[in-house]
Length: 274
Image (tube, rainbow, N blue to C red; front, side):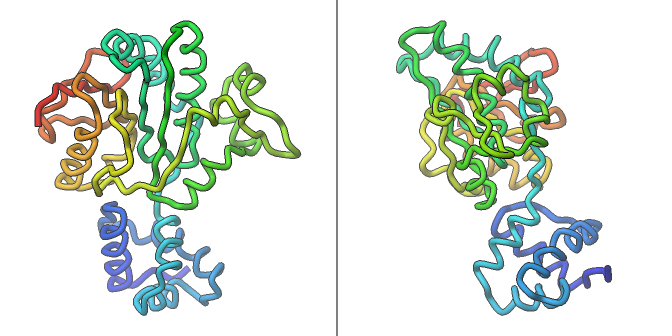
C-alpha cells in the first residue's frame, strides 16, 4: 500500500473536520489510507489518490462514504459496565426524584450502531415496571448515516451479541431470525435514531435528563470540545447528568458542569449556568 501524499492527507483531514469536526492530526496518514482503500475499490477507483482526486471534483455521495469510513464506530453492549451501573443505581433515582413530567429522556450521542442506546433501553425496561406512572424515551444520534441506518434496523450478528450482551437480555429482548438477532418491539418502541453532528446545534433533540457522550471528546480539539459541550448544555436540563468516557472531563472546558463522586463512572451534573 503506497502512502497517501501530504496534500491528499491535508485535503481529506480538512474535509473531515469541516463535515464532522473530527481532528485528524499528522501521524494519522496510515489510518486514512487503510480506511479509504476499501472505499476506493467499492467505487471503482484504482487507489486512494484517484479517490481523493474524485473528492476534489465534488461528489457528495462519495463524501458521505468517506466520512462514514473515517468515523470510529467501536461499540459493544454495556461497554465498560460502570456507567450503566451508575445509570440504574444513581442517575435514574435522582432524575425520578426531581422529575415533574414523569418522562425520562436520554440522549445517546455518537451512538454508532445502537448498542449503547439499546443497552440503556433494556435497563429502562427493567426500571419502569417498578416506577408506575413513568415513561421513557431514548434518542441516539451519529455522524455516520450508515451507522444510523444500522441502529434503526435493530439487527445484530452472533458476533455482535457476543460482545457484552448478558444471556438473560438476549433471551428476553431478541428473536433469532436466520443468522441474525433482531430486537423485539418493546425495546425499539422507546428508542429512535437520527443523523447528528455534535459540532452543530442539537436541533430536534428534546430536553434531556441524561446524556451519554462517551469516548467522543477525545477526537476533538479544545475549541470543538467547548462547542460540543455548549450544545449538550442547551438540551440537558439543569440538574441533569452528562456521562463521559473514562479519559474525558469537562474541567477547564465548561464551568456549568460539576463532577459527581461516582465510583469508576465519569459523570457530571449540569449546574444550570451558561
